[in-house]
Amino acid sequence: MLTRLAILFAWVAAIGLALFLVAPLIVIAAASFSPTPVFDLPIGGGSLRWYARIARLDGFWPSLSLSLEIAFLSTAISLVCGTLAAIAIARGKLPGAGTFATALVSPLMMPGLVLGIALLQYFRAIGFTATWSTLLVAHLIVTLPYVARTMIAGLARFDFTLVEAARTLGCTYPGGILRVMVPALAPSFLIAGLFSFLASFDNYPVSIFLADVRTKTLPIRMLQYIEEAPDPTLAALSTLILLGTIVLLVASDRLVGLHRMAGTAD
Amino acid sequence: MTDVAISAPSPAASADRERLSAIGFALPSFLILACVFALPLALLLGVSVIGPDGLTLTHYRRLLGTPYYLGVIWNSLRLGLLTTLITFAVSYPASFALARARGAVRSILLATLFLPLAASVIVKAFAWTILLRSDGVVNQFLMAIGVIEDPIRMIFTETALVVGSVNIFLPFMILPIFAVVAQLDPRLPEAAATLGASPLVTFFRVIVPLTLPGIIAGVALVFSLSVSAYVVPTLLIGEKYPTLSTTIAKAYLLAREPGFGAAAGVVLLAIAILVVALSARLAREQA
Image (cartoon, rainbow over all chains, first blue to last red; front, top):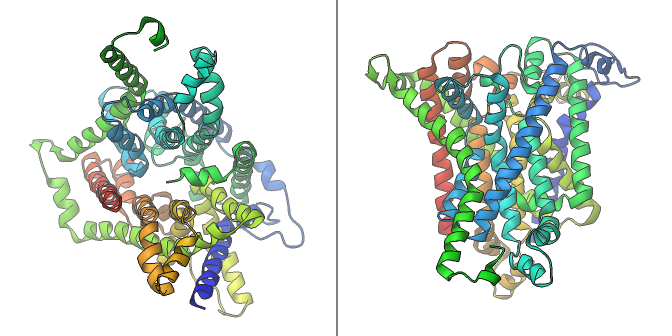
């Protein structure tokens, strides 16, 4: 009886939680079709005009391309560096591997805003002031922990003797890596890339201190729009960003399965 | 290491070479960590204690000695504590249902976790400003079902802040807990029952200790994220509820007081490090 009640309670909690989590996403999508300039729900007829207005938002295109550039490049660099580091850690030949692994993941738990002001001071002190470059370098520390965490977890399950086995069976060393290690690690690599890209694309607390008037990432621009004049155009833009995220998630799910992400989220 | 079999070097030399190649692999990440993380944080610590005439603790005295700023620190801690407590209370039971779910139900529940996790924080916080407006969806719903007669003010209240914060950080609590709960052996409760344990005893003596690593990870992550949240308090409550994060941003972006901002940053950092260290220690004691 008690067990049954507990199970019922667990289901109520799970369903309530699911509804609560998707509620804001549904509301923002609905409000983007608002027929009026206030956030009315499109009951009895919506309007697409807010979508047409996104392109006319002040400084939208430069911000979008800046955010995409920084997210792509920082993810690419972090994927290479983080994967190499994870291999070194997993093979167990690295002195102080445990401490290094903890240190690599630790920026995840550090307040982003503190990292932002620390980087601002530091870049000024060493005379590194090119905004675009400072944003890219700063985003490396935003993305690297995501890659390191996922790749260390992925490599912990990888058996390195398989590469040796492939060589014994006639593969060259690079061939062994390519045909054994790469396919086994591809899912972790993809998930690492996905989360790292999203973390950079969505980052506000670090970017805000490094941006200047002409070089603003999309999240900075969006917060500015929201604080200045929130209208359904922003809901439309948010909905498009959400759609992009859904496409990325569905593609990853098709390729590797969402359940793997739950396993790496520890 | 490609010619190990051919040249057969001494074991010591090959171990050295493996260590060297491991260090080479780790080097790029180590450099990023040192130059873009450790050094800037060390410099921040320096800026917070250096005044015009040498070393000074003025900034810390202002931060820890005035009631206003003690209130600011408490606001941050309070937001972190409330968010952690509520997300845990919902996530723990829900993760058991999630672990039992199969097939399409499980996929849908997992999707409702990952989509919000991947969605932009600004988008979600903005959505809550729409939901909680006085002419917003929540008020319209409450009036429609007759709970309230006139719209109540929700946006820019502490309730709005906590609701938004819980919503945004929930996935970070449930995922680590779910990862542990999903691995529980379903025969354990039966075994405990066979040995004469009541369901309550089984829960507190068997289930809770086994899921503790997930609880520790989730609590540490959610607390350290919510205590330092910036976008959520900015959009959902504003000036009324100054936190360490908003104080830091103000000191740098408006007031141009880098020393004071740095000191506030160090305090926030100290809170985060304390949480990480404490959780690492608890996790070790568990193992």
